Length: 84
Image (cartoon, rainbow, N blue to C red; front, side, top):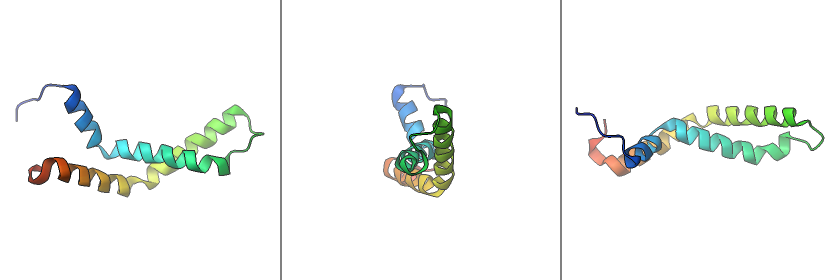
């Protein structure tokens, strides 16, 4: 298979087809939703950052299967029968 040129379109599609992209986005979204329950105003900045990073990491881990499902649907939509 010949190498494809690294065009902006190629890079965007490559990013869309990675489950990690969707895991990170959903992990960040989950952390943004849950931070109001886990972070109090009297915490230090370091503590707030640490809790937020922990929430993102937990969200990243939990969202593995949904990310694979989303990636599969995107591949099916764009590639159809040409999937690997």
